[in-house]
Image 1 (tube, one colour):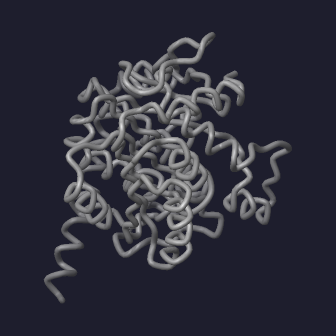
Image 2: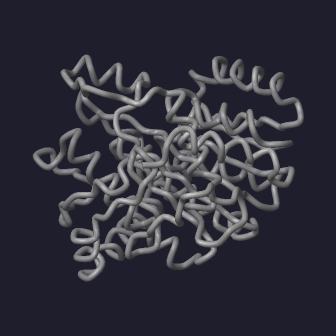
Length: 328
C-alpha cells in the first residue's frame, strides 16, 4: 500500500516540473476527476489545462476554473464544451487541444456512470454508460497520440476498474441484444475492453505510460446515487484523497515506462505492468494481477477483435455525424 503521506510527499515535488505542462481532463466536472484537476492545478507551475463539460455543466465548471485561476494565476485553464456521451463530440475536444498545443503530457479520463435506470441509447445508437467509459476514452487516446508522442514522458490515466476485468460476451460486445445488457455487464465490458485497447496503444507506442486505476468506492455524487439503488459499501475513500492519489498516479515515475516526471519516493519500486504493458492499479496504488483472464483474451486475439469492432463503431458514429451535418 502506498500511504497517503507518501502520495503527498511525491505531489509536493510537482512544482519542480518544467513549466507549460499540458493536461486534458475528461470527467472533471465532479467526483474524482474534479478533485484531481484541483490538486494538479494547485501543485504544477504554469500548466496548460483543458477540461471538458457538457452544456448543462458549463456554468458551474467555469466557476471552478475561475477559482483555479485565482489560486494559480500562472496557469491557463481552457473549458471545452462537449458531450462525451457522443463519440463524434470527441473530435471537437481533440481539435480544440491540437489547435493550441504542440504536445500533451497527461490525459486524465474519469467520465462515466452506472446506468441503474436501464439502457437508453444516444443518437449514435450506443449505450451512453459504455460510451463515456470506453468508446469516447479510446477515441480521445487514438486521436491525441501524435501530441502524446511529442511529450517527454506522456501519461494516460483512465479511472475505472483496472485489474477487475471479466469475461466478455464476444458475440455481442456492445450488449445490443437486450437480454445481454445490464448495468453490471456494461461496466465489465467497458473495463475489460478498455484494458485490452489500452494495452494495444501501449504496444504500439512504447514511450507511452498508461495507468488503468480501480479506485474502489469513493465518496462522490456517483456513490450517493448508488446508495439510492441499494449499494452501500462499508468503507469509501474521500473525494479529496482520491484526487491526491490520482495526481500521484499521473505524475510519479513509479508508473512510468521511463522517467521524466516526479522521481519515486524512497521505499517505492516501479510498479509492475500487465502482460500487455500497462499499469493496472488498485485503490492503494499497488499493481494488480489479472493475467489469467487477460492472457487468455490476448492468446485468442480477442483484443484485436475488440479493436476492430471499436473502429467500426467509430466509423459508424462519424458517418452519422456527417449525415446530420448534410441534412442541416
